[in-house]
Image (cartoon, rainbow, N blue to C red):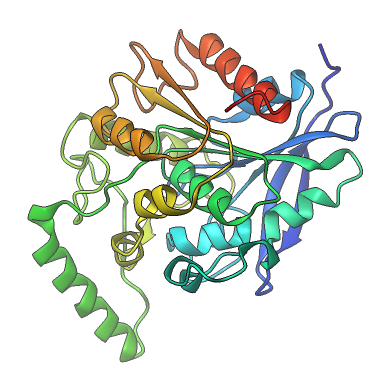
Amino acid sequence: MVLRKPHATVNFKTLDGVTLEAWLWEVDGPAPAIVMTHGLNCVKEMSLTETAEGFQAAGYNVLLYDSRSIGGSGGSPRNQIDPWQNAQDVSGMSRSDFLDLEIQLTTKSSDVVSFVSTLPSVDSKRIVLWGVSLGASISGCAAAIDRRVVAVLMVCPIFTFIRPDKRKTAFAQLMKDRQSQLRGNEPFTLPPFNSKGENPAGYAGSGGPGGKESHMLMKLAAERGHHNFRDRITLQSFHKLALFRPQDLLEEMLEDMPAMMIVPELDTVSLPADQMAAFEKLKTPKRLYLAEGAGHMDILSGTGFKDVLEAMLQFFGSALEGLLE
């Protein structure tokens, strides 16, 4: 067991000059590091401390950051969810990288990973990416581009974003808001999930049990007064999500890198069938963990968390030792 050090707040800049805020748990090093990416509109103060401390106790440095425009990080418009940009902030990727397969991927700059690699406690050749929910999909895309990363672990990733029956109305609203902004108005914002668990895009279990659970998560964060948390996102976030195609990128580009996916059996936010289908298409050394009896919101806090944590640590150990084929 590693002696735990309290986390420290750190700041660093992205390639385009936006300051990101993070919590850093360090261990005596040089030692491996885990970069943690949270879910949609979530701040670092929400729900992941136990997981980060579990990783630290096992001998890992851990960086848990607020995505741009969220929480303590800079960037505007505030609370605009842009998963491609978030992946770029981790790995230095751009949309053109996805479209042009001839680009030399290893030459790209990397903001979060580059910062972590400079820390004296970190072995820069043993950095892994970890993400949950939308952050899992973002981490997977970042890992597909940044070949300095040695492994990626995705917990209940999301692969579908705009429900077919919502597209016509949602896309019309998006264009109307863009026109409004062109006239000088502020971006329209709304709760990611209203009191009925719904959103205009039908995103992430909207209108069902998953959407209602997501609404309660955001409501609880607001009630607890988490630092700089806002229970609102820009409407244009759904435009960004509509253009995000993580499953295509992972199937095409994630290669020769150990990957693990943790799928909650009772997930109503990201359907287990969607997660399993994406996992089956991965052409890389991979490991699957089906968390029986767990849902999207309690996968990292429920009664099975110790088993999930042990499975994650076993994967990291095997990946860092080159034992996954």
